[in-house]
Image 1 (cartoon, helix red, strand yellow):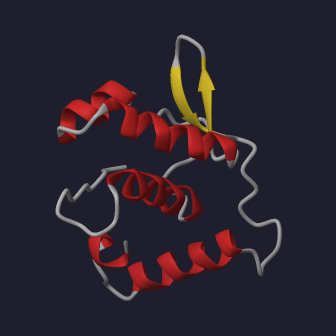
Image 2 (tube, helix red, strand yellow):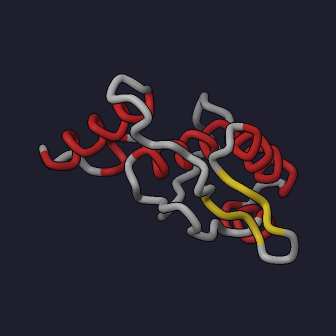
Length: 111
Protein backbone atom coordinates (compact mmCIF):
# COMPACT_ATOMS: atom_id res chain seq x y z
CA UNK A 1 0.00 0.00 0.00
CA UNK A 2 1.24 3.45 -0.86
CA UNK A 3 0.83 6.27 1.61
CA UNK A 4 -0.01 9.80 0.52
CA UNK A 5 0.78 12.60 2.96
CA UNK A 6 0.00 16.25 2.34
CA UNK A 7 1.71 18.71 4.65
CA UNK A 8 -0.55 21.48 3.32
CA UNK A 9 -3.79 19.70 4.18
CA UNK A 10 -6.19 20.91 6.84
CA UNK A 11 -6.19 17.30 8.07
CA UNK A 12 -3.32 16.58 10.45
CA UNK A 13 -0.57 14.24 9.25
CA UNK A 14 -1.35 11.92 12.14
CA UNK A 15 -5.00 11.69 11.04
CA UNK A 16 -3.96 11.17 7.40
CA UNK A 17 -1.89 8.13 8.40
CA UNK A 18 -4.63 6.69 10.62
CA UNK A 19 -7.31 7.19 7.98
CA UNK A 20 -5.26 5.64 5.18
CA UNK A 21 -4.52 2.55 7.24
CA UNK A 22 -8.18 2.23 8.29
CA UNK A 23 -9.19 2.48 4.62
CA UNK A 24 -6.51 0.00 3.64
CA UNK A 25 -7.78 -2.54 6.16
CA UNK A 26 -11.44 -1.96 5.29
CA UNK A 27 -10.79 -2.31 1.55
CA UNK A 28 -8.47 -5.34 1.96
CA UNK A 29 -5.53 -3.43 0.48
CA UNK A 30 -3.85 -4.26 3.79
CA UNK A 31 -4.28 -7.88 4.82
CA UNK A 32 -3.93 -9.42 8.27
CA UNK A 33 -0.28 -10.13 9.01
CA UNK A 34 1.00 -7.62 6.46
CA UNK A 35 3.96 -5.60 7.71
CA UNK A 36 3.64 -1.82 7.74
CA UNK A 37 6.56 0.55 7.14
CA UNK A 38 8.56 1.27 10.26
CA UNK A 39 8.04 4.49 12.16
CA UNK A 40 11.46 5.73 11.08
CA UNK A 41 10.92 4.75 7.46
CA UNK A 42 7.65 6.68 7.16
CA UNK A 43 9.10 9.65 9.02
CA UNK A 44 12.12 9.79 6.69
CA UNK A 45 10.07 9.22 3.54
CA UNK A 46 7.75 12.15 4.25
CA UNK A 47 10.04 14.39 6.28
CA UNK A 48 7.82 14.24 9.35
CA UNK A 49 8.55 13.62 13.02
CA UNK A 50 8.75 9.97 14.06
CA UNK A 51 6.50 10.70 17.04
CA UNK A 52 3.69 11.59 14.62
CA UNK A 53 3.89 8.16 13.00
CA UNK A 54 4.29 6.44 16.36
CA UNK A 55 1.19 8.16 17.73
CA UNK A 56 -0.83 7.07 14.69
CA UNK A 57 0.35 3.46 15.08
CA UNK A 58 -0.50 3.48 18.80
CA UNK A 59 -4.00 4.77 18.05
CA UNK A 60 -4.50 1.99 15.50
CA UNK A 61 -3.16 -0.58 17.98
CA UNK A 62 -5.71 0.61 20.55
CA UNK A 63 -8.41 -0.11 17.93
CA UNK A 64 -6.89 -3.59 17.29
CA UNK A 65 -6.21 -2.67 13.67
CA UNK A 66 -2.44 -3.13 14.01
CA UNK A 67 -0.20 -4.98 16.42
CA UNK A 68 3.35 -4.40 17.54
CA UNK A 69 5.67 -7.40 17.38
CA UNK A 70 8.73 -6.78 19.48
CA UNK A 71 11.82 -6.76 17.31
CA UNK A 72 9.82 -7.32 14.12
CA UNK A 73 7.75 -4.20 13.55
CA UNK A 74 4.13 -3.21 13.12
CA UNK A 75 1.68 -5.55 11.41
CA UNK A 76 -1.96 -5.44 10.37
CA UNK A 77 -3.82 -7.27 13.09
CA UNK A 78 -5.46 -10.59 12.39
CA UNK A 79 -7.99 -9.72 15.10
CA UNK A 80 -9.77 -7.19 12.90
CA UNK A 81 -13.24 -8.43 12.07
CA UNK A 82 -14.10 -6.98 8.68
CA UNK A 83 -17.60 -8.32 8.15
CA UNK A 84 -18.91 -8.84 11.69
CA UNK A 85 -22.13 -7.30 10.52
CA UNK A 86 -23.16 -6.23 7.03
CA UNK A 87 -24.15 -2.92 8.65
CA UNK A 88 -20.78 -2.35 10.38
CA UNK A 89 -18.90 0.79 9.40
CA UNK A 90 -15.97 -1.29 8.11
CA UNK A 91 -18.31 -3.32 5.90
CA UNK A 92 -19.99 -0.20 4.54
CA UNK A 93 -16.63 1.46 3.91
CA UNK A 94 -15.31 -1.63 2.13
CA UNK A 95 -18.38 -1.69 -0.14
CA UNK A 96 -17.98 2.03 -0.85
CA UNK A 97 -14.30 1.67 -1.77
CA UNK A 98 -15.00 -1.36 -3.96
CA UNK A 99 -17.89 0.34 -5.74
CA UNK A 100 -15.96 3.57 -6.29
CA UNK A 101 -12.95 1.62 -7.62
CA UNK A 102 -15.09 -0.38 -10.02
CA UNK A 103 -16.68 2.88 -11.22
CA UNK A 104 -13.22 4.02 -12.28
CA UNK A 105 -12.40 6.52 -9.52
CA UNK A 106 -8.72 6.89 -8.69
CA UNK A 107 -7.54 5.74 -5.26
CA UNK A 108 -6.51 9.30 -4.38
CA UNK A 109 -10.02 10.55 -5.18
CA UNK A 110 -11.61 7.85 -3.03
CA UNK A 111 -9.35 8.66 -0.08
